[in-house]
Image 1 (cartoon, rainbow, N blue to C red):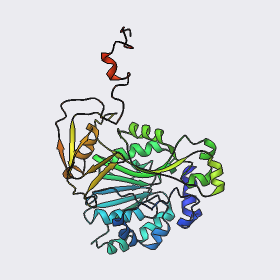
Image 2: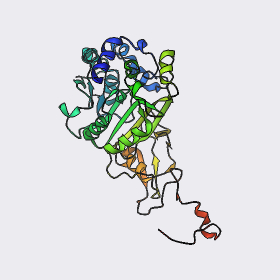
Image 3: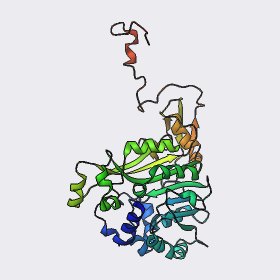
Length: 354
């Protein structure tokens, strides 16, 4: 059973971060400088038992209620607890007893270190595919995060559906995970080391995007990505030409998002008021929004800013009453040849048969 295999690998085989055989789960190089002092305050045992990829910490977290799927030793939960403050809450869910024991041992320690009158974290034992079995109210979380864990799940569509169910309208799933450039052969999926190392459970990126859409997250946005190197020669030989990537996505729970980036003549102006982002806000890999400049956006992007926790940081322009087709640079305007040919008789269709 996959669950038992993963529990054994993370609860008994791995004893410290250095026991990992690839860098699939450890990519902290680009951690923002303002987060490093927070990590420095986290208990050494929690850090030693941490096996994730980077720190999953989206913007604008003060007062938010956050759910961490596959919280492990609790490193990300405690870091996020510092960012949400005493008025927020972070709930961690994990299935591994050994990891939960580490996380729960240091609840009071971190409340004291971060200066909170009482702890603002909880750790629950459960499966991320079966969140409906836990006492979690639907539509009660502002943000759901996960750090290199969903690839370990044997039922990834269920994880997506449960996340959508638990998010508030306008809420966001923001998570890092491992993806591949093609579907993983069954022979590798059954390899316990490659699975535990977050490789053979990786989703083919296009299957993931379609899975997210099926769960209700209509317009998945890639935030960052980087290639994964496999330095262990034995594991590298097994995977052959398959390429793996560590990537962060953000998925918004917004009803009525369109399947393409449609242009309604709208724009935003970023006020420069999101903490630690005074000059530019990067919504995703393709939307780096400079402060103080009129920035044209498609209808979906406008809603991701206007109908979420980011609204107070933007001015919004345009009523969206007129549709101008596909947004420039987000696809083909008209897929039926060059629109400039319409006035040219040569090569133009002379019939209209359907």
